[in-house]
Amino acid sequence: MQFNQSLPHLDDSAATDISAVSSLRRPGPLGLIFTIPVAIIGGIFGIVGAIAGELQPGSILFVPLIPILAAPIIEEALKPVGVYLLQVRWPRLLLGRLHTGILGGLGGLTFGVIESLAYVWGADDPSGTFVAYRFTLPLILHATCSFLVGLGIVSSVVSWANGENPLPKSSRNLYIAAVAIHATFNTLAITLTITGVVDLD
Image 1 (cartoon, rainbow, N blue to C red):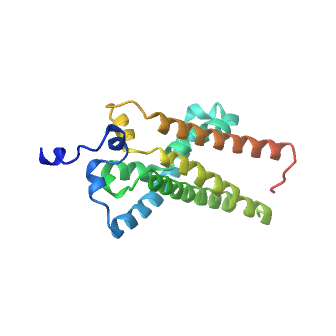
Image 2: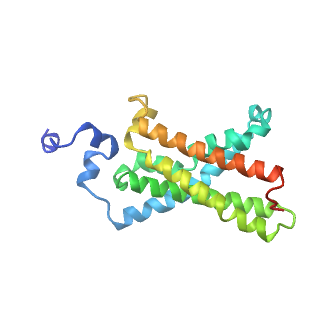
Image 3: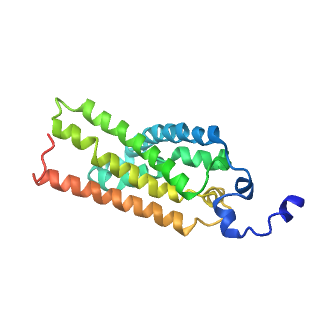
């Protein structure tokens, strides 16, 4: 009772982002450092989950649409796995939306690096242009889109996942924006390659 009475200034909007406890007990340096490897590991697990999702038997029937639609939808949901985990298990370590956005971007960057390494190692004598491309624009894309999704990973998203509250509109809109950017990038890359405007071989 005393704890609740000591927080009369907090409204519902504040509670949906960072809990009352986290606003009073800021994490120390070690706690903040801990969030970094969690975000990185989340990006690693995210790529495993994305591969599994994109290779589902149902997806094979729509192979041409995988890079344009399926990949962005699945990948943008899974790249910030580490941020979801932090929000569920250690929400006190998250300082706010900018922090979750940065951690989401870190997870996306990790995802992008692993993806690019796979593309380069899997290519037969890749050109310098191909290598340079794989480690520039796609990494910027993944980090930026995951940053947007991370901005929307607030405590009320956890409540939504538990069936307690509706999904926050801002979280939904940020996710949709990330998927749209990702899908647009993939569409342009595929179109420019097929038409011969860009040759990355």
